[in-house]
Length: 315
Image (cartoon, rainbow, N blue to C red):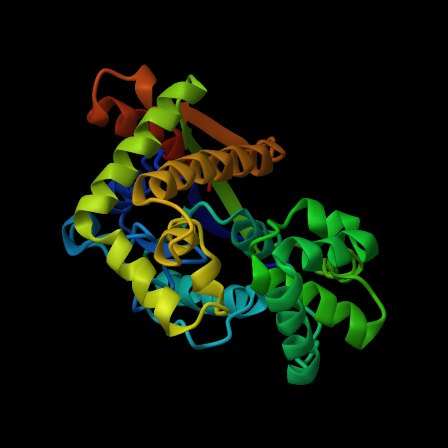
């Protein structure tokens, strides 16, 4: 077997310092960053997706950031294909790939070398389920998924309309659930040797405090404007269902106050972070480091550098 490709993966919940750490690791060890964030792919969205700024990138190339339009279809299989190509490109130039993001499905599908069967889309089936959701609500459609594929439902939020519709579509087209397809999708060993670094806080309340601080910063930077753009553009596209945007829609419809919408946004983001932690905690190979246990940012970085150095020395 060919030698496996070394990859540094910086993962963890939202607002836990992944971007800054990934950039620091890339600078220290001669790497480039590959995003593993399902919302940062969109060119039209910046604030609500916490897309890294030029200043935050600090001269380090970032791949798979802002390269798709919100109107384009984009699947996990698409991501895996593009991320593999990005990693090959980085390695071919003698650099180290540093994967960075909190979308667990993207991270796991890429690094476990998931092979996706080609299941075509059927627009008539998709439109049928979208119309059902529009008439009966997202929860009613989600209940359909829970009945036929409870395993996929456990890993999917009811408001992630695109993923719910796709799971129902796959079942209707193939007669097999999405979870059954995924169980059949690991025939090839992973081609990657991964050093996982998980960022978090020692106490959940500290993470939640950081989340609320970040949301306040996003409000100042114009996340509400982006939410209104999505609301008026197309309420059914994947990006429109993202946490950080959809919580404003009841306010735009006059169903709640702006303050209530912001309160819901903060609550839903906390819940999302909790789901991210639950997802990643299943991976026993992750080296967790709590940001708040260090005197300053450099100490936090140095701990991660130590982990990466030990990993690379074994290559």
